[in-house]
View 1 (tube, helix red, strand yellow):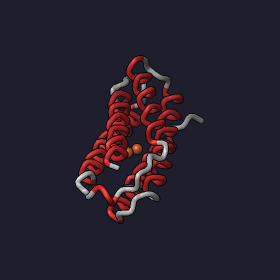
View 2 (spheres, rainbow, N blue to C red):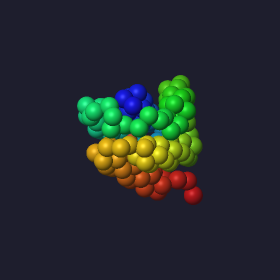
View 3 (cartoon, rainbow, N blue to C red):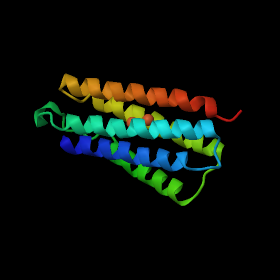
View 4 (cartoon, rainbow, N blue to C red):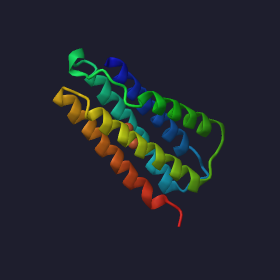
Length: 143
Ligand SMILES: [Fe+2]
Ligand SMILES: [Fe+2]
C-alpha cells in the first residue's frame, strides 16, 4: 500500500521536526543538542529512502497497516508538545527513546508484511538506524 509508505514517510518527517526543535533548545547540554541535530538529519534521510521506495510496483506491498495510524497520531501529539513548551532534559531523553523504540517495532512489523525483498531490506535498514539512535540516546539517561 502506497498509503502505508506515505504515512511512514510522514512519521519520519515529523520526528525530524521534533529533533530539530529539540536541537534548538538551549536548556539542553551541547552534546545532547548535537545528537538531536544528527538524528534529525537521519530521519530526513529515512523519509527520502521511503520516498524512493514508493516508485516500486504496488503489488509488492501487502495491504495492511500495522498500527502505523496510531503511531502517526502519537508522533503528531509529541510534536505539538515540543513545539509548545520546553521539556526538562531527563524527560526529553525518555520521550525520544520511547519514539525510537516504537518506530523500530513499526519498521520490523512492516518488514514482515512486504512481499518485495527490496522493501524488506529498506525497512530492516531503517530499523537498524533507529537502533543506533537508541544507542545514541541511552548515555544521556539521567543517573
Ligand atoms: Fe527514522
Ligand atoms: Fe530514529
